[in-house]
Image (tube, rainbow, N blue to C red; front, side, top):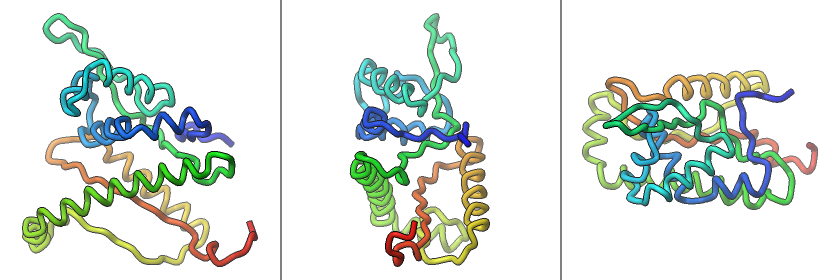
Length: 196
């Protein structure tokens, strides 16, 4: 059964669209903004040419990561606003094909970039983070460990996290962007030999 709320990148061409560091920056920028932006906004913030921003946006639109939101007339010029898709984007890590190594590199890069930004924040703002933590405000944290779940509970946890994330993907009054990277996997499968 096909999930209409899921985009799985299956081809080499689709993966290469997402592998571009600039396109990953655009996705992150749009996520941080939490509201529709124009290609000109993207160009200005990332310090790239408007034509370059437009090219990258069109590539991301091809795979459904970015969508048209609305037009606005600003000083007599029509501004085209874009948003990130509400769909979940999967790089297809579970697909066993000739692109597995590319998927692994892409996943490692995304996780590494997220951790690097987290580490930079913790290193440069440690005192501020600790002051806020003492007030009960968590501004940066990482959790790791093992939970024991049935398959149904694992599916429930995934649905809860996915729903919560989607509910809070848009900026609103008094909100701040929190970047995240979540990984969960059946650790006991690492011990099995070709049982799947």
